Image (cartoon, rainbow, N blue to C red; front, top):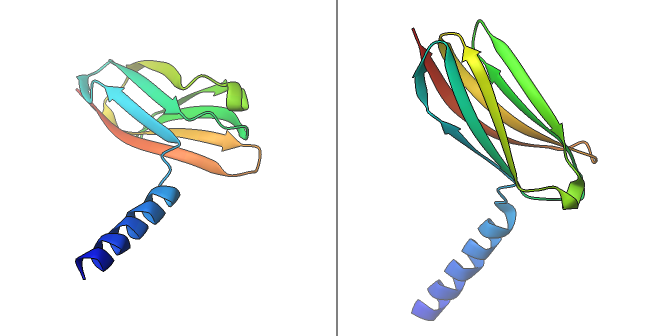
Length: 116
């Protein structure tokens, strides 16, 4: 019985791992800042032949800004730093999107608060 449960657990976690790719990750510092705020964002993208563009967006109810960088597919570097300066007060959603040649998109999302 224990052997069967162990085998079942191995199969389950192997299948979860196979489908749970984390192609895009984002770190934001600081998470809260007074206005006008400067936010530093590090986006990590796993190199892939289909990766074409990395777009980073910051959006609150009253303000929007974005930046993008072209990716070189499998030859791209993993780490991509971005800085947004002078953000006005608001509760921001930061989104990193990797646009791919097959039309698919990979995303990472984080929150950021700019206080008065």
